[in-house]
Image 1 (cartoon, rainbow, N blue to C red):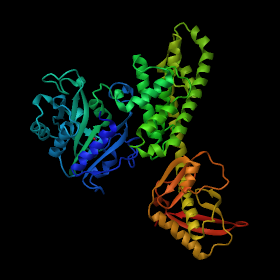
Image 2 (image 1 turned 45 degrees about the vertical axis):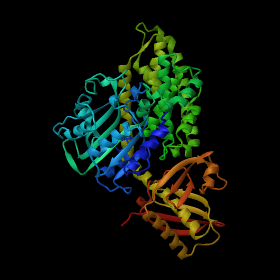
Image 3 (image 1 turned 90 degrees about the vertical axis):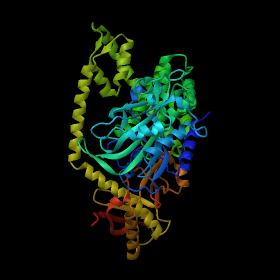
Image 4 (image 1 turned 180 degrees about the vertical axis):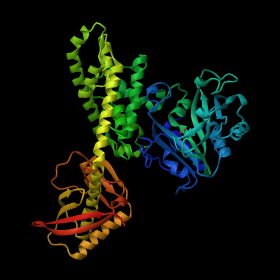
Length: 598
Ligand code: SER
């Protein structure tokens, strides 16, 4: 049986034989793209290179990339949709184009040495052309030359065969490859155009030679690029002869663990199976987000909010299976064990994942209990309502005061033969959102953003200063106090004598050198002991949580700290020590400022 581990390895190996450099997949949180919360496709981290920047590894690249897509969240649990998936990808940055790209895909899929899929079970789509770009005759003729029968080639429009990562950016026509998921052999004339339900997409080859500037403007890119994405889970489904991604080896341990938690045998009740699959997908997604290099925690905005929703939705489906206690940690552990060899960061962040996931779960269970108790109190009155309708106002109060999700209110109401006035709820919800948005807009106008930006900079500057002092004065230097405002930093540290002017100058120089190097600042969560072993500076005698945040500034400093910090030292400006004086016996005090770069 070809497992997902084997498929990943084969893919990289195949494209290595075609002179591709293997590059590492990236974080789930995109680097420079404010338009998306997550990396949604393998090409995301490569956007700058598709737009023309040279890639250090060359013009032919191959990798595997973890992705999160929440657009289809309501389809999760069917045969093919997941919020968290892996994409295998190969790229040409202005190197090969349609002919090689299509021929290699075909070779990899059908050659007995590689995946050995039956060519009779494959079909393709090509771009039919529109006002932006011509009909893709070239791709079609490459397919024909490889033996693809005419009736397995579907010509489709931009809705199907034009690929773009977002409203702007690199894009182009694509050709997609499908596998037959009906019974027996596909009948003559069957393809994605004529018989869409029976074909599952497994690979997409995008010919990116355009850049969308805005809704009206499409420009040719300087080079003709190729971006391909093969869905790992879907391809494994095909290779293992399954009808659903959840039936593959990838999910078996996870599904078994959920079954154990629920005392339920998977495959005996369609409704419950759906909940099991949703929990399997969402827990996997939550583990990957929590365990990401960039360290996201559940919260109320952006990626943090998606994470919160995924965890809470898992809990809700757990309740549908009759689970009322925390149950996600052992399942998360199974996920980590299953994927840590391919995604090292999961192993590195194991402690954090296993702490934060149950924490959010418990928080939500508490919310549910409070809300349920409140609902019980309301119930006698609700039941007196002749229409058996609960007002949206009341449902909103449960949400607003107790954080009780509307879906659960509706669920409870249903159990007692009641319905909820959803329109009224939506109205109250919208009004509430508008109010809070207006409020936060005002706060930021008042300069809070500027204020916090400066203090964040001083936080990072303090780490640089601390390390520089240890380099210049010696390892006996330890932080005795720190005080930061938007105007300056103040740092107290152990040292027996006043600093000489040369020492002060040297410390300033070292800090400014690190700023000039524009070092990245990264954060990892780990057990305190591990942090100390990794050489992180931690304050002696300070009380820490068992799992701490460690901030690393390039190769220069590593310190246990609550943050926040800037992302790169380059933004700090020019560091100047204004004063060095005695603070108390054996303790010196430095006052320093950051001046804008000239
Ligand atoms: N970007 C394309 C996709 O995600 C091909 O990699 O399908």
